[in-house]
Image (cartoon, rainbow, N blue to C red; front, side):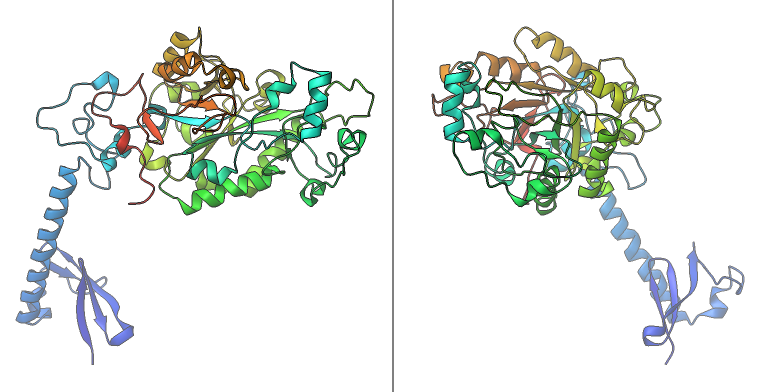
Length: 461
């Protein structure tokens, strides 16, 4: 038996699963494409159907009104709008620090729509993949190079545990090109010390390898770039509400001293082909929607520099569950990466740039001491900045937090450490964490009084 139903403002006719669109409501008229003209409702439908239609419309209108009231209370504009009203965001931005007397208490949802990713500060880890140096090699290094050896006495847990237990939101990966595979499987230092050299199968695979120093400090929690990126992707997929994770990539190609003439391996030079191969591995590891890219941030602006100085960075709401890749290298590697693409057109990685250049969005300033005001000015101008709260084992041995305090006060969005939780240092109680016990805090340079760190990330619920 034929039936008539209405969903929203569409009318459907048919029987059972054969329901089909039959007309649509315009004001008080019912129209069928190719059918009777508007204004002939009375001749087309029985009076009780008209009454049913009117009731449905009234109920729909009431529901929409209720939704509009709820959204207005949240400071959220309708779906077609760009975002919350400026008044709703009063007090989140340092340049609009005034808070309306009638403004409702801030919520995670409103914070996510009002704040951008350059308005938070998180902790990261330095050489995030690094495990303990092989003890026998470390002991030999203390005899051969007593300056270098102490710098290797740190290590990290796996990446997923850093994200989970340590609330790290920025990591660093050192990568070496190995297009054919197997370049780093013949460890001469192990052999010279009479230790077994049993390289993992992953080292024979073609593609970038992740390690600290070839031949002497090569133990990594993920041996290939694809493995490391896969671990990030897996954790991100399991925690889609996380704040964006930054991956700092340093491309390495330098030889190291070989004082005993053991025949240490020479890394492959990083050239244009290697940079394209790096982009290809990133594309293979992530879906396009998983990344915050230079093209997205630049938008309609002529350069990245122009974009980040205005409205280029995405909001926290739009950046949740995503990854942003930045390059540690400057100099020739940066120049090659942006050759023919001055604003990083089509590239997935943000370069370590000079403010004012077309590719400028991220700036690395590793030492915050003496550079605190400079970093603050970069943050105020819209750039993302990475700095370091400690150098390998120096602060961990002394317990001195001077550099940590400078790093936090600078407003650098990413503060990198080797000691993200208590007990990380074997030498003292030194630890570097975001104040307040949250994974992130409101940036001290560019947020206003209405921002609260507790609003920034809630992984579950």
